[in-house]
Amino acid sequence: MRHCVWKCVVAILASVLLSVFLHEQLCDNGSELFGHEKTVVRQMVREQFNSEVKNHLEAFKKMQKTSPGLQHASYKLLAGAPPQEKKLLTVGISSIEHPHGSHLLDTLHSLFQATSDPELAHIIVLVHLSEPDPQRLYRAAANISGPFAPHLESRRLLVVSGLLGDSPLPRPLPPSQSSPCEALRSRQREGHALLMNFASELSEYFLLLEDNTQCTPRFVSAIYWTLVAWRELHWVVLEFSSLGSGQVLRSSDLPRFTSFCLLFPEDAPLRLLLANFRFLLGQRVPIRFAPYLFYRTDDLNSQYTCCLEEEEEDGEEYENPEKPSNPPATLYNTMIALSSSHLPEYAYLPILSHFQTENVIPGDTYTLVFDLPHRVVQIQVLTGLGAQGLYHLEHGQVELGYEPVLEGMGCAHYVLLGPLVKGKCNQKVLYTAGLMGAVRCVRLLVTARQHFSVTISQINVWTRDEEG
Image 1 (cartoon, rainbow, N blue to C red):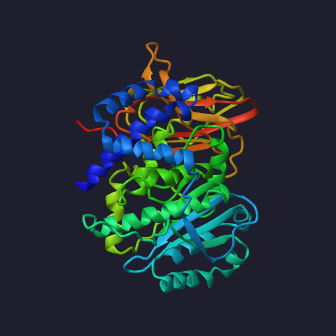
Image 2: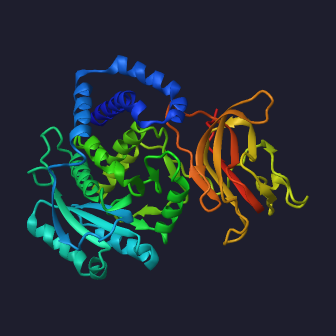
Image 3: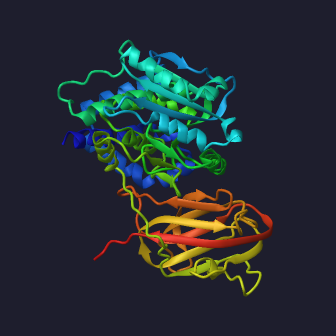
């Protein structure tokens, strides 16, 4: 019940903040996209605005004017040294001592094993240790210093511990917040705030990992190419996992996020705070990529796992079947097929062939119009041939369409799912109640001229339609 109360407070506050800051944060294009939502927000504000929310709002506005981050936070450098130059990516890990041991060392081993030497040159791994006992704190730092000494000496790994104001971590919980999960989340939230605050000047982007994470090989390169593709597009949080791990933010957003998250009850899950923060800054739905780059260590103690599962109930996640649905659809294509052996429909049909074209220009489209509306949960668009991706489409984006036009050749309204990253797009479609409906069209849009041959090898669509 308590969980529901603060969840409602967070939702109300996000709506209030959105109405106040919308014009400051969104461009003209964003205003067009959110016209309907702004009307809904205004109605919610009139109906639900109360003194508690007003106090939160005033506190947040004051922080924005007077505090670029946590001004009164102080830190101890436990191992390593800050990099001499700004990096591309900070990999941030906040770790607390769990009742049955820590998986931090396993996480660090996985991280460095999954990262090549060229990739290491562009990242800094920042570990924040939350431990009120000085002896245990320095023992934890010493456990890191031994096996990871080369990374500490090369300034690729930095270990710190921080304080909020004059109070040590963790802050004591009021008697009413005495459950183990609430206590754990309170320590996690402050640890994450201190971690992000310290990281804000180290790099251009920030990757949040939990201390119980397994990393897939070359995850840094996968994130880099995604950031390149999304550089000119609006986003606040990019997700590379369904867990608490794997969120990427711009480092410039970290100070105001740390101020934002400390306004809420101490046991507020970070995942929900991030969701409200990105909504406040104009990203309506999660942007989550597949396949996932990060996975959780399996052998966690039962208490910690319970807390994490409770937190994940706030998100919507589906395991897709092995094969895509690819529901019946009509294809409308403006690109010319080079031969009858490589027709446009071959990219969507379950056959061993592909569509081949050339001399594509901005505005060319490959559009699937479904016979019926569907709840799409994942879309995969693959261009190019073989492992090297020869003849892939260099500049394009995938869009979801709603409200089919009367002529049946497309949809009246499209929203961006994501750009092609090295010729590919593989993303989850995550729904926010009231903001997204059933999909009628999937469109691949060419955004730049490409003179040489282009191959669209496969388009896969997974759906999850309600029964009955």
